[in-house]
Length: 129
Image 1 (cartoon, rainbow, N blue to C red):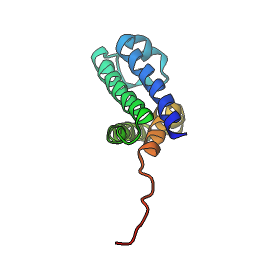
Image 2: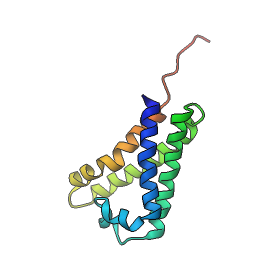
Image 3: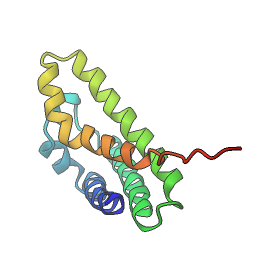
Image 4: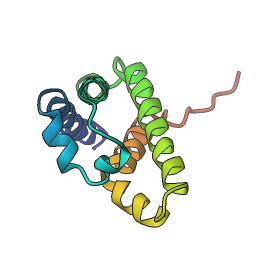
């Protein structure tokens, strides 16, 4: 199940990254809440699109070869969690915090939570020394 979920999330984040890199203005206008963050900056959108492609690659690697891709997946989870925390901080100071969190939940928080869950190590079996 974890491999399938990693593969599906890789596709979603990869598609998002590609749109950000090659159709950034369309992405900027289509994603709820983005226009409230400031004027469109094509370089910045492409930079973040590149990060999403790296995260997608890590998730794909985890889906294909779980043990080999674990380190990359942890790094991706750290980015996605930090990104989600930035959204929490922004929501805390906006006029409608609950609305901002609900708006961002599917596109920001769900990928971060899933990736963190996938990256979390399985419980180590305790063996006597």
